[in-house]
Length: 79
Image 1 (tube, rainbow, N blue to C red):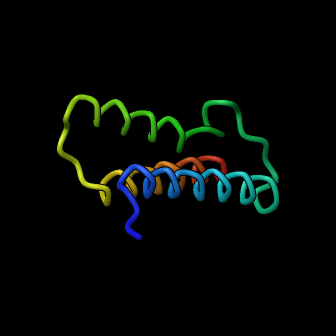
Image 2 (image 1 turned 90 degrees about the horizontal axis):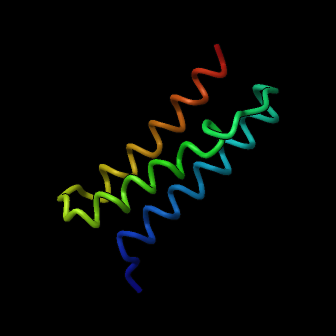
């Protein structure tokens, strides 16, 4: 069974949201604001918008972008 590109990116997004919530709450001991809390979702919505515009970007590109946004949010809150 082969997963579609959209499903792969949505799974990466779900993993990043869970990781963001767990790390922020249990390790950094901070509460994220609404925009930061759903950062990976905003990137997923950008992927959906780019896909509708027929932009040619790979699954790897969008997965890395979502992971980097998640890491950037955690880095900002860690400071």
